[in-house]
Structure formats: structure tokens, C-alpha cells
Length: 87
Ligand code: SF4
Ligand code: SF4
Image 1 (cartoon, rainbow, N blue to C red):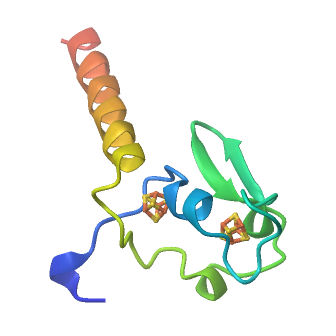
Image 2: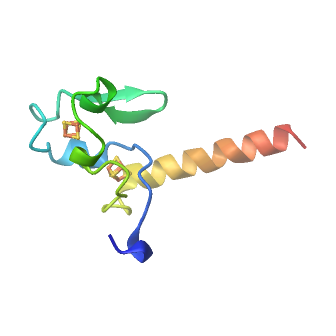
């Protein structure tokens, strides 16, 4: 992927909610799970597939979706709160 276009995944789940991949089950995919404040693929969590097989870590190709933007705003607020607590 072009490094200039790389946007990190924040686990908003938008891509899996919009389209189930070839390894998925149903729509929305039964393997999509919320854990620790973000979405995860259960197949990864149980070790059934590798990160490479699902291109995890390759970046987000729908970086302007509203779910991702909302998560980024929430993360920024959380960082601001913790900074103001410590100053
Ligand atoms: S839409 Fe992008 S940020 Fe959201 S889960 Fe998919 S890859 Fe990650
Ligand atoms: S199998 Fe995993 S990566 Fe594929 S659609 Fe389901 S949750 Fe997403």
C-alpha cells in the first residue's frame, strides 16, 4: 500500500459491517466481536487465521467513514482528559 495513503485501523468495525469477507459467516458477520472498546475479528482472537490472511495491519482503506471518525474523536477526548488530569 502506498505509504502516503496509509491510515491505521482503529477497530471501528465499519468494513466488516458493510461487507462480510470470504472467511466470514452471515451479514453482519457472526465473527465480528466488540472487546476492549473496539471491534475485533473472532477468528483472529481464537487463532483460526493469521493477521496476514485478513490483511490486518495493512491499514484502513475507508478512512473517512463516520464510525472511524467518531472513534478517533473519542480517543482524542480521552487523551485530552488524561492529560488534563495529570497537569
Ligand atoms: S473501517 Fe478501517 S478503521 Fe474501521 S475496522 Fe475497518 S479497517 Fe479498521
Ligand atoms: S471473518 Fe472477521 S474479518 Fe471477515 S467479515 Fe467477519 S469479522 Fe470481519
